[in-house]
Image (cartoon, rainbow, N blue to C red):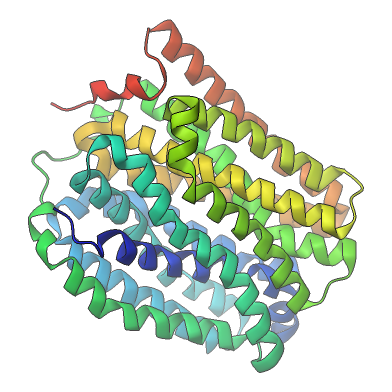
Length: 397
């Protein structure tokens, strides 16, 4: 039996992952100004984090089965704290971007380990719901991170959010060790994960998620700057406005279990959520909306991602079977490689050609991911595998 605090503590862990990465969204202009650089250059604080995350996740996935997960989470939280301190005291923007490797490596260890713990400890039927509840922590970090960062930056300067994040990570290390102290037996895997065990339908899901998720997260990372350009919002207003996305994410994460039952499976929920994501994303970027309309679209966009992320993660974990630790790490790596590529291109396009051109880049990533997901649905139906039930065959050896 899992401790009552098992899921809440994991939610707190991923809260700081979300807050550390996305609190930068409303701070691109202040950080760029502080270092004498453009907001596009400052966006490399997000891209650098994503790059180290992408490179680190597969390596950690390959060795995580040999490491006590309690120790892994504690060390990763310490690295995440070090990331905040390092960026806050970096003398130049280039050094700050280089130091973001600490945060990326920490996230590469934390997120797959958290999802693997859920898959190990809870029944398969509860995976999507439990992952959705834990992802409320990530959602809270995404929602509150930009808002609190905007307030702290406005009052104390841009370094304050990084220092606050570092302090929170350090304070969480002890509770993690206490709540997970009974999980020592779960760190060792019965089989060694191998790349050759990955099947085509798993790889299709990985590629699809990387594209639609990477494009959606990249768009969120730039949404603050888009709001600033379209509506002339200041740092505080931008941070609070971006928080609407996080509110939508919370609604989606909290109600993912209900939505799954209504649509009768993770696969149907995932497909519907990605379609909703595309719709709200397109209206936000291309429709001539007032600020209130843009904020409503951000909220709907968040709801869609709140459904899609846990549903896709549960599907991937179920199909991966005994290789779930490695596959979830590969999924996180693919997500962040896509985020790095799309964000870098979209940020450059936003600076040189404006929001509409940047939106076209982001929409292309979303559309390609949705097409791959649709292909997966067709393949599953042709093989006589329907929705979530199709994943129960597993890949155990």
